[in-house]
Structure formats: structure tokens, C-alpha cells
Image (cartoon, rainbow, N blue to C red; front, side, top):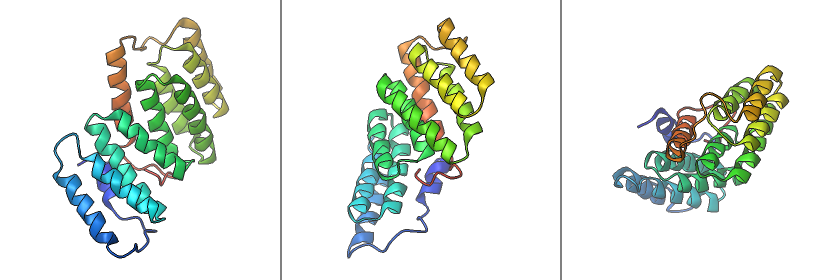
Length: 212
């Protein structure tokens, strides 16, 4: 079990007492997740999140959705993980780490319009959360492997908005040169790299991001 999963298994302090049968239903879904074969562990956790959301307990919904993302990524279901991450953003639009995860998954799926949107939202959320330095390094990590000039220019602009002009100039230079020396041109290798990076974003809790 990853450190992220261990953290997500702890009940949120703000969890509400649900309706009758609530804990029993969640316990059943927990057991289903624990006993599910490889490839199916995320579905019960996602359903648990939906149950909590329907009951109005957003804190616990985020708890289960975060664990579902972790399981789905490790079971190699990035599109399903992307869908769950989108649920988190609807509940908690300023979820810094989830926006970063979504940007990687957008890149993996070649959804450039969504990647640009989530990059912008991630940058804005990081500024609000006083995580400019971490976000700038994270965006550089993306820019190093992305070949598309449109994304590289947007990444350079984002880094500039975070206050790191030298890094921004470097990334804009990569855009002009057709990519960094570490750019990944092979489609399969690029997708694999992006998914692994998305898994890495879920490895530990970030300060100021309670969303998973």
C-alpha cells in the first residue's frame, strides 16, 4: 500500500455521521476494494465517494475519491482516474495537487485543450496556496518532456506568473528550439512517462491541499 493510500485511509476530521446504514455501506465498499482483483480496486472506492457526495459529506467524498485515483492509476486506468479527479475539482476547484495530476493525465491522453486549462488553474491555485516554488519546479518537469510548442509557451508564461523569470525564459527557449534535450517524442514512452508522473503526484499529502 502506498503512503498516499495509507494517509487517505485515515478518516477526515470533518467527517459527518451519515444516515442509517451509512457506515455499513461504506464498510462493504471498503471490503470490495480490498478484495477486488487487480484492475477493479478503484471502482468501489469511487462508488463510496459518490455515496458520501450524495449525502452531502464532501470531506469524506474527497477522501474516497483520492484513494480511487491512487488505485485506478496503479491498476493502469488513467482515463477513469482522470474522471474521478474531475469530480474532485468540481467539489474543490482549488485542489492544487489534483490539478497537477489532471494536467499530467491530460498530457498522457493528448487532450491539449484540457491540459492548458488545468495548467492555468494549477498555477492560479498554487499562487493562492503560496506554493509558487513547488509549482514552478513541477511545471518545468512537464515542460522538459513535452514536444508541443503551445504547451511549452503556456508553461513558460505560467512559470513567469509564479515569479521565476529565469526558468520561464528557459522554457520559452525550449519552445523556440522544438523542445528540451529531454523531450520524449515516442508516443508510447511519452504516455507511460506522464502516467507515472501522475502516480507520483499522489504519493504524499501536500500542505494546503486537502483534496487528495
